[in-house]
Image (cartoon, rainbow, N blue to C red):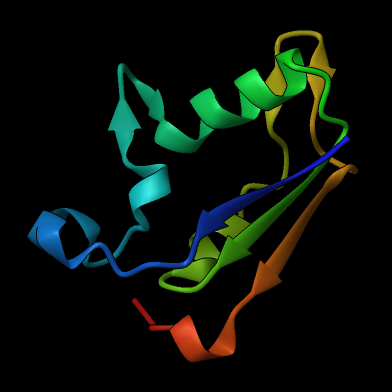
Length: 89
């Protein structure tokens, strides 16, 4: 099964919180918000994940390893940059 996570928006309503960090990397409960989605996808049987990025896409690309306990999503995770939604940090 394949899933697509949309993480390309600027998150303007969050103001300064997302000026240099995409919304999906903001910490909630001590972990990046995107980790909750990734864990649930893997737990639900998804083996391929595409993350569509835009604003601060480099920060998401820098997530080299995403550890999920004994499992890892790395290798089956693809990051696609959307140029028309890309804004530098």
